[in-house]
Length: 165
Image 1: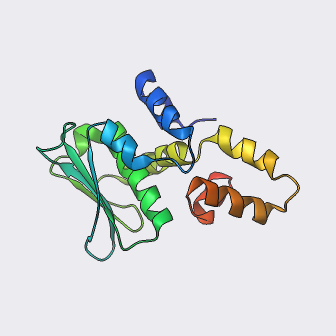
Image 2 (image 1 turned 90 degrees about the vertical axis):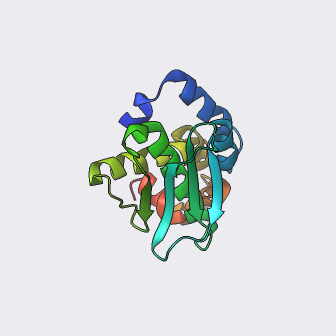
C-alpha cells in the first residue's frame, strides 16, 4: 500500500529507492549522494529542522541541510522529507525551502503533507513493516513498535502514525 505520491514517481526512481530500502536503517545520505545532491548535517536556526536549496556545486543542483542538533531519528525523517521535496516539488523550490519543526514552510500545507507521506513511504516501507510485525508477533504491540522503529531508525511516534495508531 503506497501513497499517491509514491505512485507519482517514475519507475527508475522507485527502483533506486527500493534498492536502498534493502538495508535497514536505510542509508538516506548515500541515496542523496547517488542522486547528485549534497547532503549535510548543519547547525540551523532554532526551530528549523531542514532545508533544501539550489547549489551550483551539487550535480543535481541542490543541497539538503539537516539540523544536527535534533535527535538522529528526527534528522532521518527530515532528510527523507527534504528528499521528497526534491522528488515531488523540484520546480517549486525556488531559492530554497526551510522546514520548521512542524514540517511547515513557504510551500502550501498540501505540499508539506505530500512530502510527509512520501518520506514515510521511503523510510517505512509497508513490506518491511508487515514482515517485522510477523517476526515479532509474540510481543505486545508496544514492544513490536519499539523494535521495528529501532530497526528502521525512526521514532515510535512516526511508526505509530504510519500504522494508523
